[in-house]
Length: 184
Ligand code: AMP
Image 1 (cartoon, helix red, strand yellow):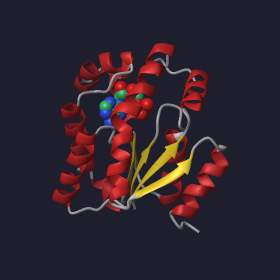
Image 2 (cartoon, helix red, strand yellow):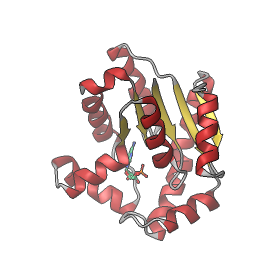
Image 3 (cartoon, rainbow, N blue to C red):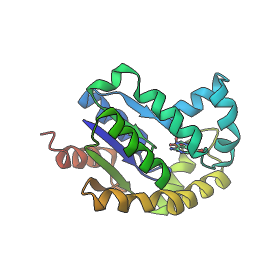
Image 4 (tube, rainbow, N blue to C red):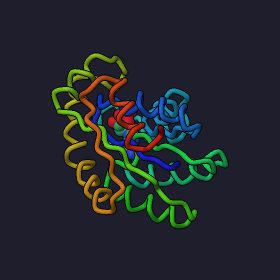
């Protein structure tokens, strides 16, 4: 299965993505985690991405698109994949489609964990990642609304969008995703 999981900061996409990948035995491709790791290990990508993560800004599309292309070329993706935190802009979504056309792959579903800004704020403040200061959290919530919400329509229009109420507990959300994907 080929899946995308979308949601604002603190929506629970990391947690749900991990469980889903375990269940479906597909690789988890988390752009946020990979960028944080690239920064920690001081790779070239990490060097370029760092300033954006520190401010809660989006890493430029060109960098992200090249990065995802390289990742989807690794053979473990033959069994399917789950993209977590990607795409985040309309441009990334369109480019992902071109890429999948090129690879003759098809996206099954985009799962949207819909949570209120209040929940995004409180959950983000509860965890303690280096890129989680109050100012960066606000900026990420704003960018989610401005840049990522529009791509939900893109997937809804093509009947590929699954909406989930992400305000509910981890277990309930997990169960609802399973039902919507007919995982039985
Ligand atoms: P996340 O862990 O998904 O919240 O991502 C953490 C940070 O990584 C974001 O605030 C962005 O700075 C950066 N990032 C992750 N995914 C993307 C993406 N698809 N496009 C641009 N920036 C991204």
